[in-house]
Image (cartoon, rainbow, N blue to C red; front, side, top):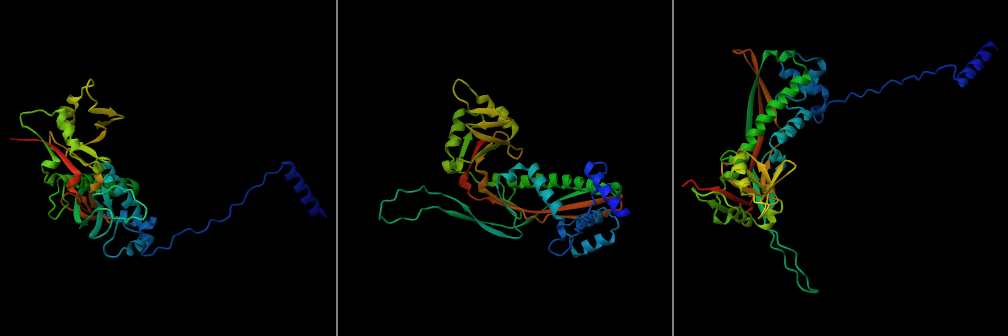
Length: 338
């Protein structure tokens, strides 16, 4: 009876709010991921093992088990791979404009060429197939490498700090090289650059050596690009050409040939993209999607020790190939040198 009275009294106090109740937390489920050959790259254990190994540190039992799944040639963790690709595109914005695939090995794909307009169809009349064309492009993979060095103090860095340092250094250097290839690659055992296109009279406007750029030169350049390509076109030049050649042409009483809006310049409504990969007094106008490229998502990092300098060396290795798919989609303004 005493127990019953005590329980009754306790319930009454709880109902009145005189006694606080405490929630009992249930044990959390074991969320440890079972690592396999298919998923190990996405695991925190493998990321930690990969980075610690690069830093020359000893691995614990879990890290060694995760690292063993990579075999004799460890590959970069998925999250780190994604970060590098994202950073590369930030440092080389043109990669977000062109047609870019992420396919391992040699790849063939078709790029839309000439597109015929729709026809009016008379009832019961035979329909003739359109004359649309597709251009097949074949891309290989060529290595783009960057070597960075850091002193033995790398051992004192945290995992996150080391990862950020490595991603930033490798991404920036690889991006600069890839952007250079997009413009100036020879096409021999490397990507073919836009500047290697042979522009004929139908796709080129020439300014005499002793002459200055005129508004008519710009109008002629725009007139040489077919309407289908002009819809998504951008015009590329370096800063000197923009400020020394194009901006002096502005005459509000006649036209708005060059305008600025939100930090972006426009020539006759077409966005201007600035790059140091184009020579002074030159400009190239094209639809960026007509440059096609492949950058497989298998960037890797190799490490070695430089005993002479008590330093660690890290080699970033990416794959890239690209080429102009349709040269008629590119027009160029050039100042003659003779």
